[in-house]
Each structure stands twice: as C-alpha cells, then as structure tokens.
Image (tube, rainbow, N blue to C red):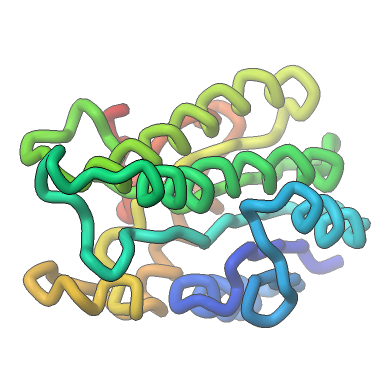
Length: 220
C-alpha cells in the first residue's frame, strides 16, 4: 500500500514541488490550498471543514504556507511596525499551522512512523538573530517554532512514532522571494527534494526540533 501524504498550501511554489517530489517517491498525495480548494488556514471553521472530510491516515503532513510581509516589505525598524501587519503574519504563519495540527491529529497513524512538518525560517531563530529587523516575520516564525515544540511533547504521549518538526527550506526561487534578489536561491524542485530527505530521515527521537534543508539542527 502506498504511503499517504497531505500537503497544505499545495498550489504554492514549494507546495507544488513538495507534492510532485512526494509523488515521485511513491506517496499518494492529497493537496489542499486556498487557491484551489478555498482552504483558509486562519479560519478554524475552514480548517475543520476541509480536514474533517479526510479519513486516510497520513504518514506525512506538511504545512507549506506562509507570508513574508505586505507590499511595503519586512520592517526595518520599530518605527514601521504596525498592529495590522503583525496580526496578519501571526494569523498566517503561526495560528494557521497550529489549527492544521490541531485538526490533523486524528489523521496520524499510531501504529507506524509518521511526520508533521511546517515550513519555518532561520530568521525565526532567537539564538541566530544577529541582524534585527523583520519584526513580524521573525516573531511569527518564532511562535510557530514554539507551537511545534510544545505540540511535540503532548503528541509524544499518544503518537509514539510521530515526529513533529520545523523546517528551514533555505531561500527558494518563488514569488514569495522574488523581491529579494540579493539572496542566493535554489529551485523549488531542489528545495523540495532536500526537505523530503529531512522529513524521511527523522524519527520520533528527533521530534520537537528545528532543522534546515540540509538536516542540520537550527538553534531556537
């Protein structure tokens, strides 16, 4: 029987590549997104409705959604920080994945290895922050990391073979990063291959950790 994978944000650049990469490795892939399915990860009613229609136990669940900033770009100083921008990024980058995980718990098998992964970012690391700026993005990803860490402790009690991890994909050449040409990028297919390698390589012993695309642990 094929392994089952669920990709949230499957219509995005990384989401499409992850879906294709998983399919190439023999997974039966189910994809959900706002663009194609009307899934709004910031609405619990929407998350409950869409995930409630699924029954297959999933060996892998990946949240590949995220938002970097509004049209003005990430904040460079406290002077440019706004309530609306920070709330918007927290809703998409932290609350959304938390809701997905909440409603996906019943979809994880208890009798075999499984993984939940959410795309975070190295700039969400507190210990790695030496440049400052990007307040909303940094803090929303730091919040996501804490959600993953906290959930991993709880779910280890009921799903002993489940690994919950945060992943830094690197800078991927998608619409998400097109306004930052100064950063070296990798094609989505390469990023997806790297991330799937990490996901398939972790076990329950590594649950609650934060890894980069090469499988190296990132400090919180």
